Amino acid sequence: MTLPSLSTLLRTGAALLFALLVAFAVALRAGAQAPDGAQDEPPPGATHDNAQDAGEDAAESRATSFRAVDGAIREDVPGGMLVVGAYGAIAALLLLFLLRQQSQLRELDARIVALRGEIDRGASQKGNERA
Image (tube, rainbow, N blue to C red):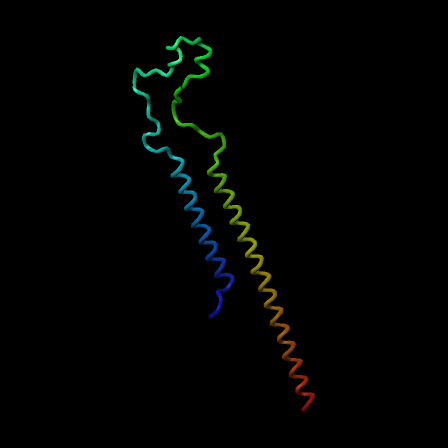
């Protein structure tokens, strides 16, 4: 059984990382959308200032009363795209590292072939000297 070449491993790894990043981006996009019914509005005529009905002063009731928020809550920093960018940067660094390893292995293979050639030439010269 032979091991796959480094270039095959690189292509497979790159395809796997790309698929994971796409799946992660799709999951982030799906999670960022508010589910149906998340923005339910209170029924008309419902009051949120029950504290005023109890006779408390206005400053105290504002500090403890519930205020409905209109519209979706937005983040100041879009964290989803930052996470996808971070994983993309890690994937790019990993691919660069693997490409560097591949070039170093090619150089080492060329050196081994050259040394085997020298050993073969040296062995053949010794064989010629003995004869």
